[in-house]
Length: 412
Image (cartoon, rainbow, N blue to C red; front, side, top):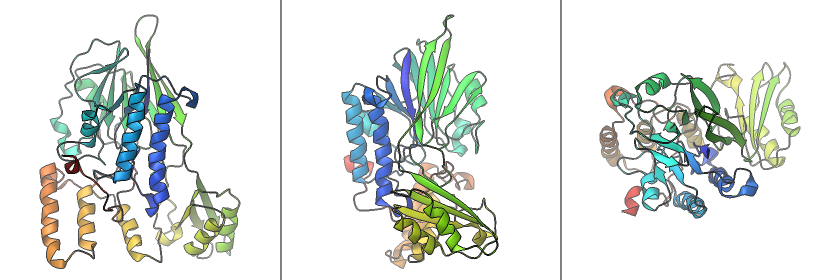
């Protein structure tokens, strides 16, 4: 039997809501997974490996504290003799060498690919995130193995799950190896299905990267064994993580009701150190978000986000349009994040709006970004609008570019 932790979409380094505390939360969640892997008392000790299905980092240029935090966690895992096997996600992908390659060179990780990595009696393969425009080139050619079971770790939005743009049946039909399980990352919602007799599962994200992610965060515990006839058996179980509390307050205002009703609903919850997400619908009076935020903070919340859906056409399912009245630039950044732009498009936007960049340099900077995108294949035949934002995680914001960000070049 082989017993592994299947995790992914840890998005270490994401400074959600511009909050340094939230940035630390994402690292803490990743460390909690490692704790469970190395400490038998924490619930999932004695696992044979930790499998990471991509988006370890939120950005291709992680901040130094986040990089060092991940290195420390991986060293603890290595000291416990638990291998870390992973693939590269769309958020962290760089041209050429990946951060995962650096960790591999340090002996702290294995980058999964077309060759099998055998742990116990199971062979593991990997498939990094591949842009839609390049998937027709894939041949799904995997080297043979002689293990009792085989699993593919991949990053992408696969059928039959929501928002899918990658056909799982095609992958399984064309793969030169028969997989007993496909362990996925990219979709932040944990879910499991069977496709042509193969278990296909998402582990979900380890922290809430958007207000839509209301379910508890966690990872999968997967066991590979065999039945009495020698056929492979896969058991997938869900494990929850103790992450920062989110308090979701949905208020439908009746005619004549207003901010007092909203604040009353907010105060009914335990707000201690929580992220409070308030959603307002109904026919009541206009509500000033700042008044609700103040009430939440007074009740002990870490931060509060208020969305009055009536302000965006009355559609309760409309995109959040939270506005920070004291910082209009932040409001613009929030709206840009909601537009599901590609990484290249976001960088172009940041360049154009960067007040610290002389106008004479903007054209050269834009030309350089476009040239880089072409080199990376990020501008294939005009299809470049959503490679970085399909999974629900908000895009890296313009504020998250401090001086301690590091690139692969810094280690060469």
